[in-house]
Structure formats: C-alpha cells, structure tokens
Amino acid sequence: MNLLFKILGYIFALLFTVGAVLQYNDPDSLHWIVIYGVAALISLLFALNKIGSIVPLVLGVLSFIGFVYLYPSDFQGFDLNDGDIVTVELGREAFGLLIISIVLLVFAFRSKKKL
Image (cartoon, rainbow, N blue to C red):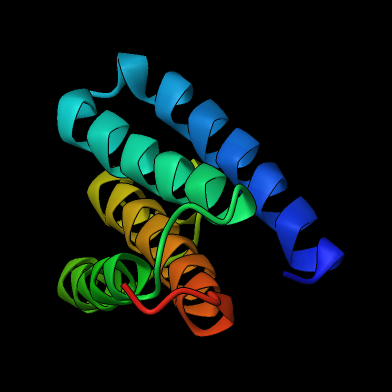
C-alpha cells in the first residue's frame, strides 16, 4: 500500500474518533457515535491493510445515501447564525456523512484486498 494512503488511514481514524467523542452531548448521540466509530475502525483497518474493498465500498455507498436523505432542501449553511437550527444541524450531519462516504470510497478503491 502507498505510504500516503496508509498515513491518511491513520489520520482519518483519529479524526473520526474525535468526531465520535464530540457527539456525546448531541441529542441523538448514540447513532452518531456508532457511525463515526465504525468509520474510524474501517480507517484504522485500512491503514493496517486488514480490510478488503467490500466493507468500505458498501458503507461508503450507504453513507452517501444517508447524505442524500439528510441533506436539507433549504440548506442555509453550517453556522447557527446562518438560519434555522434544525436545518443547520441537518446540514452538518449530512456533510459529515458525505465526508465519511468520500473517505470510505477512496479506501475501497485503494484497497489491495478484495474481501
């Protein structure tokens, strides 16, 4: 595996772990902790070359579907001063899923293992 992608795996494992920890005070924290925790685990396994392409591919596609589902029809930005708090929160959650989706899909296509 390319050293750059190995380093990216470790970086995203750390970033997604931080994201999971920061969800503790969110009203719907449990499922976001699980989502970010799974993304962190997959990133770590990718960096260690212990995961194939299927799991990141499937979860990357599911994350993208989640992004499309959550994306608010009247997106107003990420800052609370940008608009309605519910719309801002949905936008933040949707784009979190988009980031996860992009990272996992890149890992899926860069994985040397098929399963």
